[in-house]
Image 1 (cartoon, helix red, strand yellow):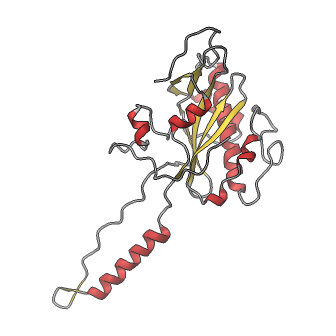
Image 2 (tube, rainbow, N blue to C red):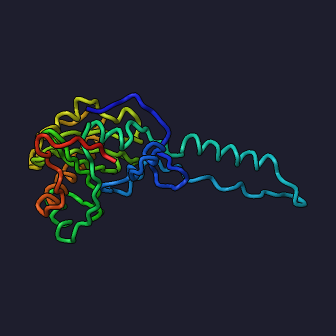
Image 3 (cartoon, helix red, strand yellow):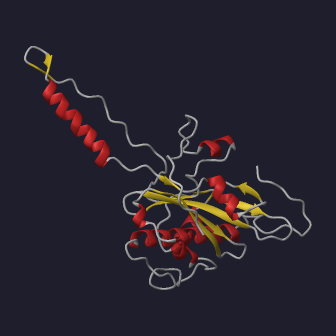
Length: 262
């Protein structure tokens, strides 16, 4: 289930260019551009600033106001019509992790896939995975509560990116999907009920559109991008688990003390 109705400015760090929200930066967590990267997407990046107006002169070096004004209006029109839209931020990383793992201790890991592991991920996912750098967020939950691992996947939908959090349960199944940021028009964002069909699914042939996953009229590209992202995450998770890189992603023994994540 995802939260809607929040439309904020793009992530903005404290002048560091990290791309994280102010609350996110204060807590010391990394920017939402973590996990797997696909098609070079970035969330919250401001559009490239327009350069200074060129000096237009005529006659004996006097400015030509009419031509300068026309050029200025053209640049303003480009800014309004042609510049990329600001990201529609629905959740911060902190908020998404709190929804997924309330009361749990979450540890951010940094893993570099070997060439063999990266090739295995591509084979399992059935598509390209560009980066070997992965940042899984492993949760240890007290009192026998379910743990899991969260991954943040940034990818292109049509021409603009979105960021998803995909939570993988202890048995390698999809436990939750949250949309953190979406830069395409809101009409391309499916309803919450569509994302719920991923719950409990494992990596396999049926995890594909027109098989186990139904499409969305008017949002086919989003449905395709989401399904590919889920397959990438599950493939990475399977490879990391087989390598023992996700220790601590399972529940703690009953009676363990409650720990808040940093």
